[in-house]
Image (tube, rainbow, N blue to C red):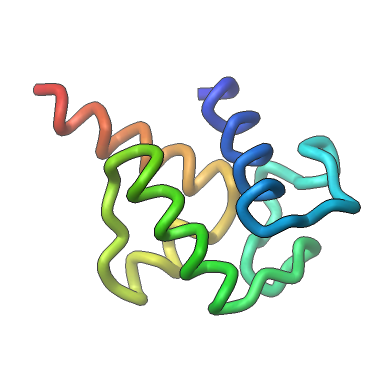
Length: 88
């Protein structure tokens, strides 16, 4: 799970062109949207597309998105659970 968290931090920075941030700057448990990273709804949309493309995991409604993008750890947990579900 820690490897996935680090990978997601890097992908968030790359996807959103947060050039002045490093993965270490993103608190794993801090609020993603509106938090220290300053993500807004457009950023979330870009991240949803990245998650679907890179991990094959869909986030198809706003309520789910709010839960999933609560923090990097919540996003990693959701991806991990959904990828595990599709394996079985």
